[in-house]
Image (cartoon, rainbow over all chains, first blue to last red; front, side, top):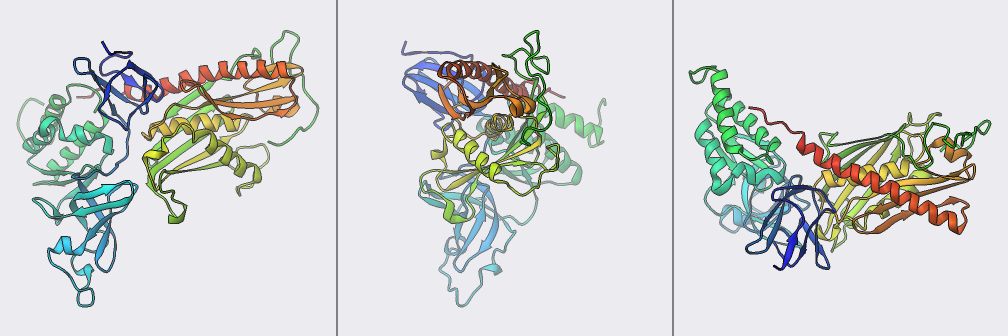
Length: 243
Length: 246
């Protein structure tokens, strides 16, 4: 065997905790660091390892958003330039959205104002097109479901909990959508656009998202959320049943 | 803070205990909590006896003003501040020379553990507010700041824990308080990252012999080990305490 794991599966670790010794493949490079042949945790998180193919991973429980190409993010326009918008994407960098990308045609700044299309405070769903350490992330709104958001509400959560809200292969998101009848756009940066048929369902959905955020590290989440939504519906008289 | 006022009290009693009843190698009662502030990305409250500190971490976020950004790593900014009501005599809220220097010293004690290379051009802000001062505020602040950084999810090689060792009435004592600092012969704050095996802060005010210094460092590292364990428990407790409610 190429190495030994020093902690249990799904064990809670803190920065500086020794996780393993030997040769492993790190699946989460930003949460594990290696000194010699020893692997240490860099964050508060849950350890996942697979001894059959020697992989190590730590799922962080607290976090920030760090852009990655192909991420879908929900951004708020922060400032308007002559040919581009600067977008707040809750990252350490501003997102740049070019007008030619958003409008799909070249623009003449002498003849039209960008505020006619998107103004400060407007919300967009965008994809990170290009990003690396040297330059600010470049956004694109070309694609299905991308572009300006015209209705709905925004829920902000900790970016580290986004994978829980989406679930395995989108299972949690479809549970939420099916049980409440709302539409969700989950941005990788921890902003969620929700569009609900009525106020009660919206409140239930927000409470359910908060519950996911709070209990993300405890197994059996999807079932608990299903039960929670059903109970809330009964409590609000949306469906009949034993209360 | 405050300097020596009045008569020097007896710091080591006849039974070998200290003026507050502690053994020479005993820490003050410690309390720690993370996630105390809602609007910060990470926060912590730490109490060593009557020294109480709150630390808040914001970031990684955009470096403002832009010219302070470093192309290959994040800037770590640190502000150590004592609240006007934290001391016996009101302290002016304006940053003093001492506070500016301590901010720098604390920042330099944290920089070796924070993986700043992961956030080029960004900034990580650490705000430390001393709510109540009774000696050992820099070590308490450092302990709180490293907890707050971990609570913010910022990748770190290790946590930093800190404690001061002093020499009072000729005896080396751990975790000195205000009275012991004012009337003692030496004060030596030490901060270390135990898993990394690095000392990140070492200051000495007063006079120690070579042998005393080595003994004092050993004593400090033993104290740090205890504080470090508490820090880890505190970070994990936040999650272990979450109750499943259905």
